[in-house]
Length: 314
Image 1 (cartoon, rainbow, N blue to C red):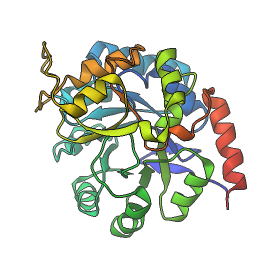
Image 2 (cartoon, helix red, strand yellow; image 1 turned 60 degrees about the vertical axis):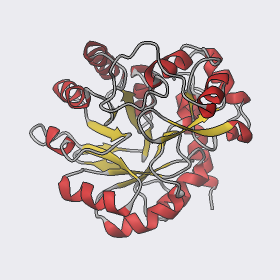
Image 3 (cartoon, rainbow, N blue to C red; image 1 turned 135 degrees about the vertical axis):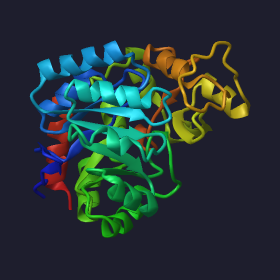
Image 4 (cartoon, rainbow, N blue to C red; image 1 turned 90 degrees about the vertical axis):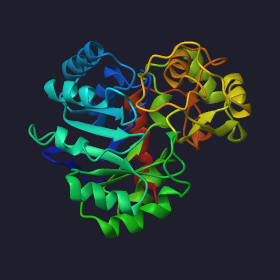
């Protein structure tokens, strides 16, 4: 199968693969630029970054690539609107917004013409997004890592949403191999978003201990917890997530990072600990099919493998 280009507004990706924006600081300039250089769309995970740090990462990604670079940001973040404005002021190509839904976000990109791409998990939100001015949508199924908006497989969501909207539809959740890409495009998706596959890349900004922890995980190690954001979240079982599943682990210090927080634990600090390699007390978000990944690879080699798998797909 020849993969189609993915057009989002005026931006065109030669390969219809969006690299998932994985926070905190797993998806930084180096990873986003590497994906963009292969013809995909690279995302910088803006959640948890200061505005100056985000500016630096966007500028670095621009220096490393001439491809399509966007950001991913949690709608649940208290400074969501200001982060989006900062990225737009730096000339970001698109904004992907998840972990919540805001009707106001579409106006943020209107003046500059910056595409706003919400992550949705239902026909209803897909239609609302189109009506409010989304340039494209990411349709995320239950297989995804991090915050989840549904218990329905992406393969069951895509046909109905494809029939309901005319926007470009990007399928996310459980997409790790070439056959997955081919299957979802045949179902009507215009492209796919891949997170877990790039979390275990050489360019991902996670500590070696975190990447090794990913590779050691087995299917029974992947669990769902309740996030302070107010949504379920899929993660690899660690001693910390085991504690969270038993009951609250209230933060001793609160940075007031979320618009509304359940305070059952501090998600930002837990994600930072994992990114730095502390898999004992860190939160290791991941997709359902992470255990199918066998080794850490450079982004270029991942794309080469995906191209070969797509060519061999039925």
